[in-house]
Image (cartoon, rainbow, N blue to C red; front, side, top):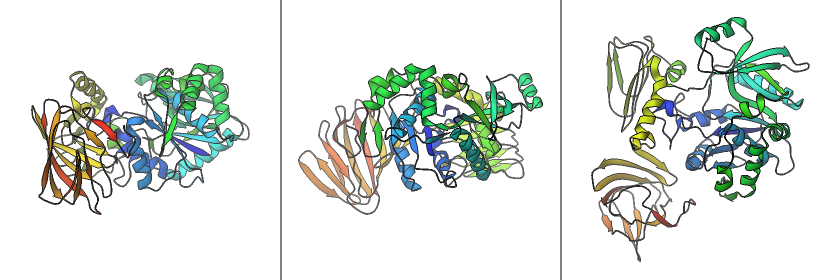
Length: 469
C-alpha cells in the first residue's frame, strides 16, 4: 500500500490564518505539535505502508519538503502541480507515478487537511478497505453521520459485499437541505462522503480511461514531460494546464460499477470552517476554545486564536475571533461560511492579506514585513545557519541591510564582505547581490527597501540553491 497525500487545497474558509500561500493543511490548527499535513502522515504509522507520494501546488513545495523533514518521513516523490485541476487529475498522476516501474500497488488516497481523532478506528477501517481493494473494488470511506449536516455530500449504502466488510454504493447524492439531511440520518442508509479512497492503481486508471480518457491522457503527457530536481517532480505546465478539472467522485466513482463504501466512525472532521475547528478543539468549562493570550469573562462557546496581541472577551457568546499580525476576524460562529466571501472581496480589492501573511516562510528562513509606506518597506529577515538567498538583482529598489544577530556574508557586485552585529551595508539599485549565513546560529537582519516599486516579483535571479530561477 502506498499512501497518496493530496495537498493542493487553499483553505479560504479559515482566513486569516489560512491563506493562498500558506493554506490550512500546513498549520497546527488542532495539535500544537503537528500541522494537519503532518498529522495525516503520523496516523499512518500503524499501517506498515510504503513511503507516501505527495501531490501539491508548486507554490507550496518548500513547506511540504520541510514539514516532511521535520517528522522524518521519506517519500516517493513530491508531484508539483503548476495549477489546480481537482482530485481526479491529482490521483491519476499519483497512480501513474506508482505504476511507472511496473508495480501495481494499492493506493490509500487521503486529503492532507482532515482531522481524525480515533487513529485505531481509522487503521481498522483502512485494513478492511484494503481487503476490498485487493478484490478489485474502488473503495471510498463513508463517515457515520452525527447530525443532519447540509455541508457534505452523502453516500447511500446497499447490501454488504461478500467476503469483505464493504457495502455496495447505490447512490452518491449532493449536499441536501436540512429536511432531506434529517431524513437521511433517520433512515440509517446514508454516510457522509469523506473524499478518502483505497483502490489498486491499475483499477482506477482503467476506470478513468473508460470514463474520462481526456483527463488520463493529459496527465500522461504532463508526467512524461516532467523534470525532477531534489525532492520534486515538476509537471509540464503547458500540458497540465490543458487537463480538464473534475473530482474523483464525478469522474469515476459515480459512474463505475466497482464502487463500494467502508463505514468510518473515527472522529473525522474536514475542518472546513472555523466552527469545525471549534468543535474539534479542547474547551474550558464555559465551552470556549482559547489559543494564545486570551482573557474571558462571562463568555461562552467562543473560539479565539491570537498570535500576538491580548484578546479580552466580556459577555459574548458563539463568536469566532482570529487575530494575526496583519488581520483580525470577528464572526458569528453560525455564519462562518461567509468567510470565503470576505476573501473574495479582498482579492477583488487587490489586498495582499487575501494571499500572503505578513510573515512569510522561505526555504532559507523567513521574512516579516514590519512596516511599509509609499516608497519604502522594512523587513525583518531571518536566515537559517548555512543557508543563502539567491544571487539576485532588483530593477526598482535599493536596499540597506543592518545585522542585528549573527554573521552575514554579503555579495554586492564584485565585493564579498562579512558583517557582524550592528554593522550595515548598502545595495544599490540594479546591483547583483546575495545574502549568506555562513555561521552556526540564526542570522537576523533589518532590511530597508526604497524605490518606486517594492513588489516581490521585482527579483531577477542569477543563481539559486532552491531552483527558483
